[in-house]
Length: 339
Image 1 (cartoon, one colour):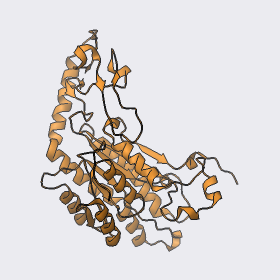
Image 2 (cartoon, one colour; image 1 turned 30 degrees about the horizontal axis):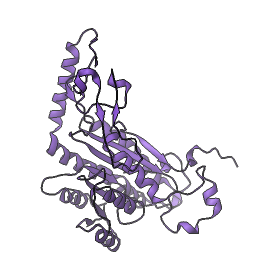
Image 3 (cartoon, helix red, strand yellow; image 1 turned 180 degrees about the horizontal axis):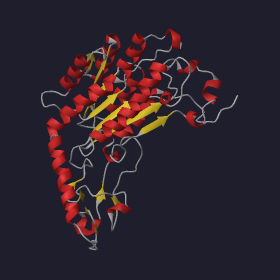
């Protein structure tokens, strides 16, 4: 049984689309192992129930993601009566390749409706839940206007110890020094204590009480911290014949990611996407030596490779990564190939 424990995501609530199999299943398992309370949807009822049994709580929603209303209702229901949702992973997708002249509009639309549109649907619901908990767009605009007003009243340079214009450290005895501690991350022992002196711009240790022109910086130190992680594909930038629908859907996810990041700026929510290369979700042992050798990394990817990057993006300490697309493909898209 995969049980929620005391990992670095303890107390966080997460929703994963397409979570019953493959990459999605590994993401569900990885987040649960790090302490998150994970919910997921899929149209594979049998696979969903099996994974739900391993999680040990009601976690599975049988949903066709092309049904926008049903998908939105699933996310809202998973958020519970208090409307809590901290992490959203948009993983669901289908691969349908066919020659251009054999690809009708209905087939093209089906891929878009399965791969791309659900990212917008779930992200919009996530935003609704988030602003209901932590304040709406009007509150954000007030903060932005307040910041502009403060900036407009500032003249000259502030030379006090531990201060820089527009950035004030309110911890560490007013010297700009603070400590940052953390633990439980699966990515090693980079967690503190760390100390920094002088300007906080010159250190990795940003005090939890740091302010930007008097306005709190969302760094998850007791403040709102949300994550939206979208799964795209390296095919957003590279194609083979007959992949029009798939390429368009994955390219759309990359673009939608940075659009959402801009729209949610200042809310404490970061939005990023991951573009996997060849991730084998079937019989890994059946792959040939040539399959592995063509990759600069020396091997084909596994679902866990993607799940670990999702965990990295979900880590509360990684809020400076936003609107980005992280390619995880064993180096294939950086390999120059001539025939």
